[in-house]
Amino acid sequence: MEKLALQIKQWGQELGFQQVGISDTDLSEAETHLHNWLNNNFHGEMDYMQRHGPKRSRPALLHEGTISVISVRMDYLPESAAAMNTSLRDPAKAYISRYALGRDYHKMMRNRLQKLADKIQLQVGLFGYRAFVDSAPVLEKALAEKSGLGWIGKHSNLINRKAGSWFFLGEIFTDLPLPPDNKATAHCGACNACLDICPTQAIVAPYQVDARRCVSYLTIELHGSIPEELRPLIGNRIYGCDDCQIICPWNRFARMTGEKDFSPRHQLDTRQLLEVFAWSEATFLTKTEGSAIRRIGHQRWLRNIAVALGNAAATPQIIEALKPMLDHHSALVREHVQWALDQQLAGNAIPTSQVDLPAYLS
View (cartoon, helix red, strand yellow):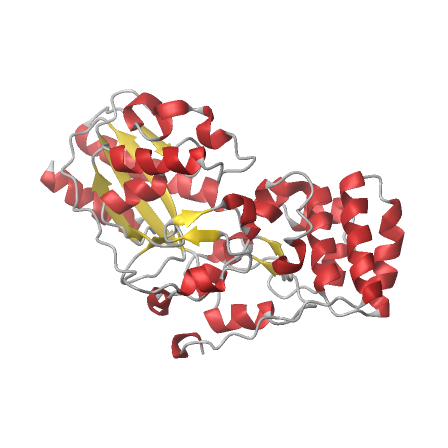
């Protein structure tokens, strides 16, 4: 099994994963943290976080016979932190979380995991397994931490000492008794950069994120109205948020991705707000084909952009673009367009944050 574990790690790297680790299935500590998080209602409308009961924290209940978990990471960083920060400082630009600029990673990584499982099967014969890429109730970060891929930082993302945090995770649950790797140790120390920079102060304490305040939740997971008091804090972020990763000092070690699928498509990294606000539903579906963005649908896309336009400096062009949308068939869109128009007419532009950036972001 020790030899097989080494082979699995080598095969994983040959398939394009930057790192492979192995863990057992004891997630009792993570289960306690999850229960406390749910009891605080920090999950908001994400009912799926509690829907499956203990399956999320007890792998053998999710896939019978599981005794080992193979975790993998794949880097996706498409540009420098300085370039991202420049986009965030331009209120006329549409900022999209950098993980969503290219093709949806789920299918691609799942195919790679299947190839890894096939290689294992050629070596050992038939064995029990199931592959996951954010596709089932899996505590992927806790498993990755146990397998040595990194530690869960104060912002709740996984951090690797040599690679930062710009990577996706995937898993293979298996009945093979593979030797586990050592759990990663934490190295956040006294740093609170991610807590300080969070635009909505969603990181309410180290290692505790109130999703109900998180920009990623508000722009992706939330189906209804974005709370008015949080709208000005969203700035020009129309899909997700990267601030806590941009500022993390460990990301000075992050490497740019070599995967073409993760490169920006349809100029989504440089689009102006007024450009994407003008997309019809058909255009939206075309431009987001094969992208994670498509899951929010055209109405929430318009909702998010309307908020960003409301936060931008008042211009006749924005006002004229907003007015026709007051007749949109969606009440959700109309509500946020009206708010944006009121902000524009009142001249309530939200100044872009001027952060004293550390040298590693320059």
